[in-house]
Image 1 (tube, rainbow, N blue to C red):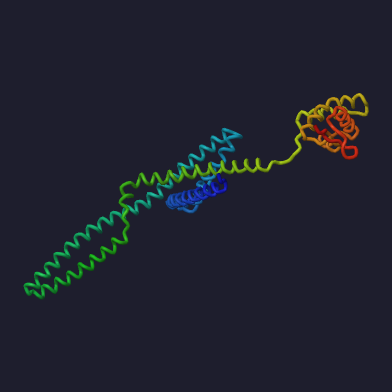
Image 2 (cartoon, rainbow, N blue to C red):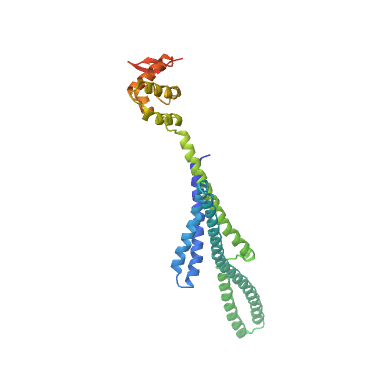
Length: 304
């Protein structure tokens, strides 16, 4: 799966839903605030809450790992803001739908007027022919003027009909369509936010696996033993031998695993040993056939 492409798609969808939701919330809050004279303040509050609603789902998985109570409160906050945003979207969309419904009713009325005007025009044209055939010239002239007027009215109705959009489907199912659109915006926004968070986490995991950090890891048991033993080390040979014996196994394990290099610097960096003790331990490991001399007084793991 191309993670970058998936992230770009989710980001695009999330931004589209966020902008649409924020705009609908702005329209709702602006109209609500206008009733009490604080339209701008209400609009800013609406946009802010809508942005919080859009971003908050991305925090839920991370917060849930740290504190389930805070995560639960965050879920409740997100749900409440989604309900408010849905109500705002429904209100704003319904306002536009009502305007389209009015346009539909106007279109029906115009269609009826056109029907009657056409019938009137046909009757007038028939009357004009009858008058001409009866040599009623003056009456025919007056009828011709009426025909011209009705024709102009009919053309005006055709023009008005062409400028009026027919939205019969919306007029029949406006409430269901409005609810579906508003809920879809919120659900898609929520899902895309969670998906984007998951993709970011997955991308981080892939990068960490593909480029591991080369670090020397010292076993915790070794560090604890060294920290507890080092303060008691003195120049006394008995204490020195006790220290060497206590860390011998840990040093051997660290060298065999490759975590520590078999050198004075390696032992000093890992265990804080002075050169004298490092030399003694390396010599013991050489006697145990674990190390072999190498590079002018140094040691390396014996080849098997």
